[in-house]
Length: 154
Image (spheres, rainbow, N blue to C red):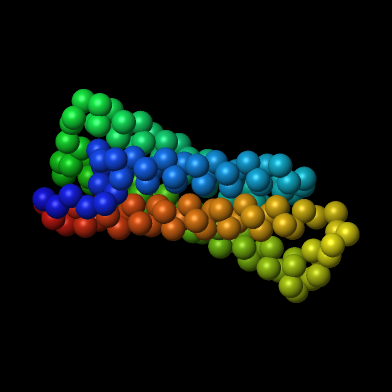
């Protein structure tokens, strides 16, 4: 069984999970601070997806803290299988939410021209939130990749 960077129960795994949580929370905070986000279904889906990602990553970060304090090994086939499924599900949901939100903002900014400097639509905040969501997805994709390889090594 290999110990990879980002493995559960390691400092690098804890750092990865905390970073995922931080970017998901930042995406939520920026989107919620933008006025009128709730009128767009894609942005509501982004909030829901990032909320799920935040809960999942924060929960696993807490599990990593427990494992580090108690010096427990989290690399058994049942736990890693759970981590793989959870990471892949949240990764797919996060990617879908970020892509759908990006599609809406591209439509508004480039095709319809709604994002003018004096526009009442806070496009810049929407864009920042979407970029943070894509970074969150990148981090969860790294984590799910590591978990897959750990599972394959059993």
